[in-house]
Every structure is written in structure tokens, then in C-alpha cells.
Length: 386
Length: 112
Image 1 (cartoon, rainbow over the protein chains, first blue to last red):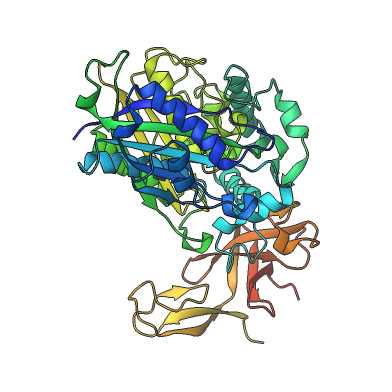
Image 2 (image 1 turned 45 degrees about the vertical axis):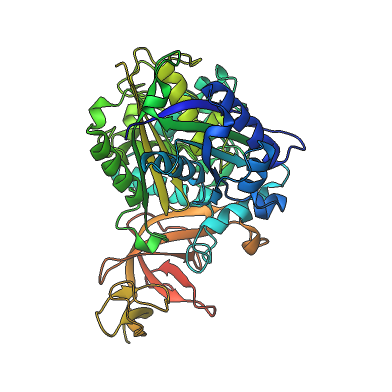
């Protein structure tokens, strides 16, 4: 069965002083339902992605709270957790619920509230996604993980500060025009290089910001949308994979097997290859992650990610536009919401209503990575009329 | 003088090796993992300096974490870099050990 995106909604990502996760999630879900034009009574299942709400806000049972707030009680309301890939996982479950014929309409929501906690508490909460008997016990943090990745990439491919800074400058610039992004900025390579060190060689602007936010997508059978205005956006692939639970399970620091597997599965589902993708929103939790992810997704040749960024080949208008939204670096990274926020951005591109349009975009990809590469989703969306 | 060794875990049934203890062997799902001493020689694949530690390591100050590849078997292992990290770089010869808590540590080859 062909499954399509019926509606999308998103709060701005950034600081929402005093907001509860359920309030943000309900707001995004309401917007997605209204955008879909589908009566909420038709929603047969709700999947909610969240990662650290219990630790940081003390609030769990978010799926049920959101179902209650939307007055769709009675349907199965399920929270899923896969670290920073929680939102993408929620989306895939909603797609499967419709594709299997179990329900006609499903709602996926992702949410996180993080800014109420200080950086140390957030670091501790995020480290819950690490194997704390090995990598965590060594004192590793997520900035540290990507510091390790960068040093290895530099040693093998010569990826330097200016290559990685080009990612930051591009994404921060893209974020300036995106109302959903709160951390857009005009930065120079020198400013990025001079920022405070966090986990060498990662510096402040290499890190995505601690954020609050929610995003939601309504999915339904494609034939349910006949007669709806605007281009229909079909879900050509919704793939999910798992990967090694710790660094010791990797063969190579320069590749996350979960991304490679999910991308391979997604291309197979869609009957497409990397050359067919017009744009990608990928998981740039740290600047160098964009470089490694783009290589793992097959969009950039192995080892060339840094050079492509520096040469502008990943800009809008380049060979493969990456994170035209500003990505996690400029939008912020409310961890449970990010995966659905990426799909929201891709849908806006394919509908032709994005503030940073990729001209002629017909097929877009979203990539959401969790933990030390323990979970990943890759989604491919396409205009039905393309 | 003997070459240094580091303790890993090996499945008596299938020979699968892990750098961490597990109740069940992921290779054959058996429960016969046992400690095994292997040569501690390794090569540093990467390192980072943690300046903002997680709460579990609060107060430890900046410290280095590395990833090394064992010379025998080629497995990657993460661990705290012990002693003087200066002079270590990607490709440096290092030696693995375990601290009192059983955690892997990495130090320059030949360092005391």
C-alpha cells in the first residue's frame, strides 16, 4: 500500500520557557491534523518519539498525555525511544501501521524539553544513550565521540578545521531564513575556529544547541488524499536499523553501520539510488557528523565530505544540498523531536513552500541517528506528480 | 621481561572475543565467556580531550579519551588515556591495561 504524508506541524525549535513536553507535542500535532484536513476521529494510532523527558522533566506517559490532549483517547498511543533517533522511529511506526492496513490514518509526534536543565544535567541525560559500562565509563561524551571521529577522519583524509567549519557556516547561514530555527547566524570560518573548545577538536559552534521543540506528521493511505489540494507527498521508503552498542563494536571510526544499513534498505525500498536524491536533511548533531553521514548515505564519496563542504557542493544549488533548513546546528536539537522535524523540512521542500527552497526538488531524504550509532532511520519522500 | 597483556573475554564455545564482560556470548548465545589475557599492544586510532565531562566524571577536569586498535585481532577499544598524553597522536604505539575498576586504560607504549 502506498502511504503518503497528509499533514505536518512543528513548533519552532529553541527555547520555550516553562513549556511542558506534552504542551509542545499537542501544539505540533494539532497543526499537523489541521494541515491534513482529516478529522482527528479518523486517527487510528499515535506514536510518540521522546528520549530524555523522564530524566529532565520528570514526565513520562507522553503518548497517552498527547492522545488525551487531542481528545483521541481510545486509540493505541505508544511512546518509542531510540535516543536521538526517537522521532524518526515514531514516524516509521506510523507508516507501518498504515502500510499494514491496521489503521487508515496514523499520527507521529516527536518532542523534547531540554532548556530547563543546565548543560551538565543535559550531558548526563544524553549519556544515557551510551553504553555506560564501556564508552561512558571511559568518560566519553557525545562531543567527545565526534571529536574522535574527526581526528580519525583528519588522519585518513586530511579533513581540517576549515573543511568542518564550512559545514557550520553553511548551516548557520541557512538557519537565518528558517523561522523554525532559532540558532541561525552569520559566522566566519575564523569565528568558528576561535570558539571555546569542548572536546578537541570540537568547539562550541561545532555543537548543536540544547533545545525544546516538537514536530508531528499525519500519514495515511495515498488514496485517502485524492482531491486534496497541493502536491501529494508519498513515503517512498521508511527504513530503520540498529548498530553496534559501543565503539568496540565498530570496525571503523569513520562509519556508522546503522546509517549504512538504513540507507541501503531505504534505497532498495524506493528503487532509487543516491543520485536520485535532490536534497537531504541529515543528522548534523556535530559539524563533522554531517561529513561522515553524507559519506555513509552514499551521497558523497568516502573521504570527500570535508572537501565537498568547503567547495560549496553541499549548499543549496550545489551537487547535493544538505540541511537547507539549517540542520541541527542552526535549528537546535530537541532530541526526541528532531527526526520528525527533519521530515517536516523535507515535506516543505517538496511542496515548494520552504523558506530556503531547493529548486525543482522532487525527492528528498531524512536521516536520523541515535546514540553512538545504535539506532538510525532513513526516510525517502517524493512528490507523487514528479 | 614479559610483554604486557590485557584481559579480554572469550567464549569457550565459539572463540568470540569481547573487550567488555557480557553474560551471553553474542557470537553463539552461549554462556561460557571467560577472561583471557591477550597482548596489550595496540595502535591509537584517535583521541579527544574531554573538557565538559558528564556528571559521572564531574571534577575529573580535562582528560583524554582514546580509541585504540589491538595489534592482535584488530579490535577497536575505547578507554581513558592514562599518564602523559602529550606526544601521543593517531598512529602512536600504545599499551592497554585495566584500572582497579576494570576499565580499559590506554598509555604510550613503554610508559611505566
